[in-house]
Image: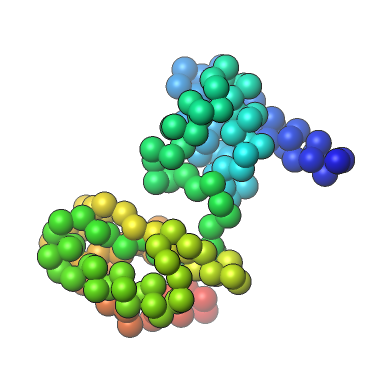
Length: 156
Ligand code: FES
């Protein structure tokens, strides 16, 4: 019980600076995502109270944007572009290869919390498709091997 109280007060402290801002919900969501790694049910409740929204309204906002997750994400987030230009450059095949390699479905996180695979719709790198974003880096002409090599390099 004490743990839950500490968690709630930490959420309140994260949210508080944004409550006086017009449109403060979005930066508050970003701050929680950054600090906690995901938007928990407790966070949704605290945000609803702080901004005088219903929980459903907070949920509508956070599910609309791909930036937010309701579950803890992996240390490395692989976002595969599945928009049209990348589809024509075999992003579907790449998705199959990567999900099969890591034994994950899209939007799943590995048991060791190392990898999350997500889809994204355009990374602004259409001429070099298929494009993949790994954490903050965009890889063009991506392949399974290129993604794996990139991950190995970031671990060193
Ligand atoms: S369609 Fe994939 S980067 Fe634009």
